[in-house]
Length: 337
Image (cartoon, rainbow, N blue to C red; front, side, top):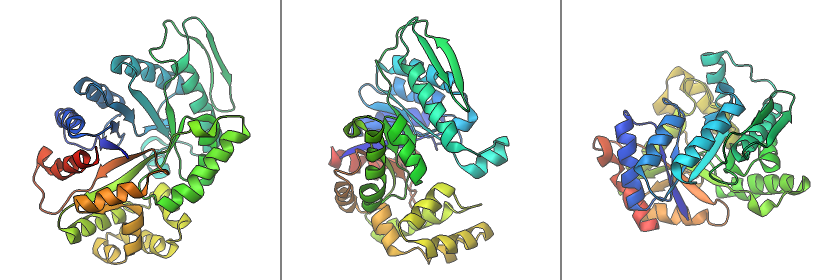
């Protein structure tokens, strides 16, 4: 199983760069730069400079915070900088944060993302002097590239959880970015068939659609501590308000009762009460948790359903500071490679 490392939550760019170099040496196949407390583009450029062979991707840039033309231009630059190793992950972002931070109008996300991904892919692949045209209901473009792209096409993955966005990803993108809290069943029974059917319906080759999947990875030889740590992180997805993406995934997989409980408790800060209600099945099927050996077994479960697992490291109680906190994750990558 290909294994990627999620970066971008760290306190400094220096640490992100160090982790990327260490991660590649340990055996990670890809580096995925998240857009959370930082922009994704600048750290991605730094990670490209710190690595030599692994893929470098964004996971994911917020389409509501930027225009598709400039996003495609940045993708061209990062692909050139990386020597053709770059993958662009895009998504709608968190509805609540978009509205709070930017006052963004989140109505009509399907129409917006259809235009956004279509334009980004066209700009990223645009040849020197050839016109790029798109007249959409939300975004339009009239543009010509002034130089040749490094790659004939840069993979653009659309982050998707709900059925309509998954369908759209199959129609217009190169891959479906599946978020944390995904089970084998979610990929096998919901995401893959819906995206592949949508691709075939518009005349695309369904086999060319990629399925990178993010996952909470809680590694600790003390398995009880690993499980407690990941339960805490699951509950925090509902604070200060439920994250619509992960709330949706829990409900689609039949965990409506827990989603309701977490949505009631976490906005009030009742973390311990919420943690006690996390079903064991959620930990066992929707995260990668336990010892290194346990986590290797869980990675194997996703073979044939996810093309790559992107490890979002879960902090452990009493762990060391800095890069030393990643040692168990590096051990997992080395054992997996």
